[in-house]
Image (cartoon, rainbow, N blue to C red; front, side, top):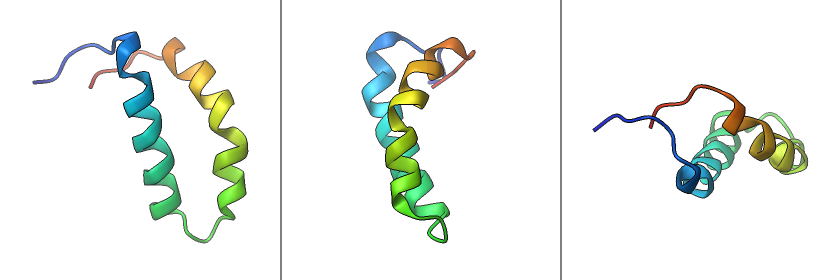
Amino acid sequence: MIRKYQKSDLDALMQIWLEGNLDAHDFIDPSYWHDNYELVKKELPNAQLYV
């Protein structure tokens, strides 16, 4: 079921974000995604998300 994002979804969403980017963009150094992890985690809740 698709529903609006809740704060409790953040850890799972970030895991998907990181693993998805590492897998899909293997031509980019993994440190880029790890270095931006906290920034994305901070900003992601400001977006209108559905999970």
